[in-house]
Image (cartoon, rainbow, N blue to C red):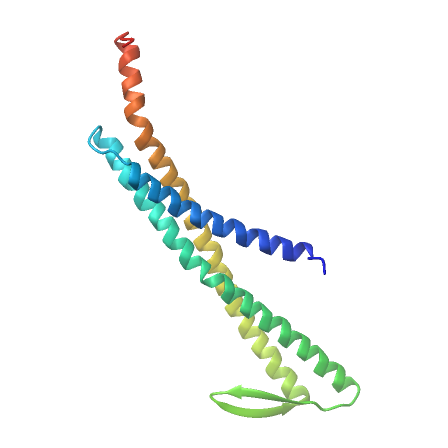
Length: 178
């Protein structure tokens, strides 16, 4: 069975998110392994700031990743309950009373007809609110992760580029070709 565009989009997004998370920790690890301190105080400070930013980006990415399945799980429950509510409404129009079990506080109750529909609708509303909260966390954490990653990369570029830039500047200013 061919995948829908939505399924492909979700799959590609998940791959990108894991790639970005792996890239963050890879760059952090490589920058730590290849760091040379003591040439320039500012370069050393930017190196450490870059490490901190990349570490924060990775941790935020992990915290974000734990909420993605939660959001999909909630969305699945909303879809299932909405479909169940539509079926009960159709049965009611045909004059059929369907008894639906509900579990609250470890007690099972059976509701039928309009009572079942109202209970399903209220549960869907609660789940939609939970889904909105989960989505806001996911989006917020993605923004924080992205900015921490970009700041980390920028700091590492400054840290690694500052000593050679100073050296080249001195050569140009003092016309020293050596």
